[in-house]
Image (cartoon, rainbow, N blue to C red; front, side, top):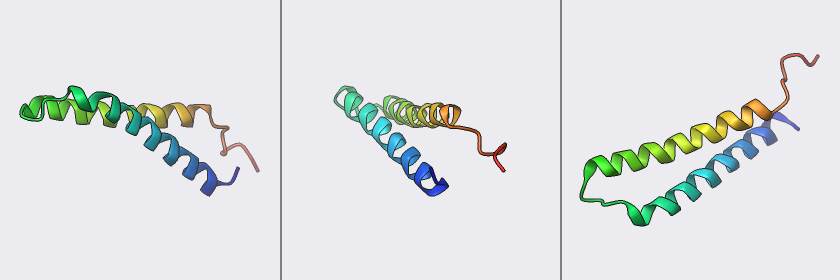
Length: 66
C-alpha cells in the first residue's frame, strides 16, 4: 500500500470511530453543563487517538524495507 493510500485509510478509520463515538454519546450530553461537554469532546478525541494508535501498531514497519 502506498503511503498516500495508507494515510487516507487511517483518516477514514479515525473519522468513522470518532463519528460513531459522537453519535452514540450525543443524546446523553447536557450542553448546559460545560464540564460534561468538555468531557464528551475529550472522550471523542481520545477515541480517535486510540484508533490511530491501533492502526499504526498493526501496520507493517516501513523503516526496515529497502
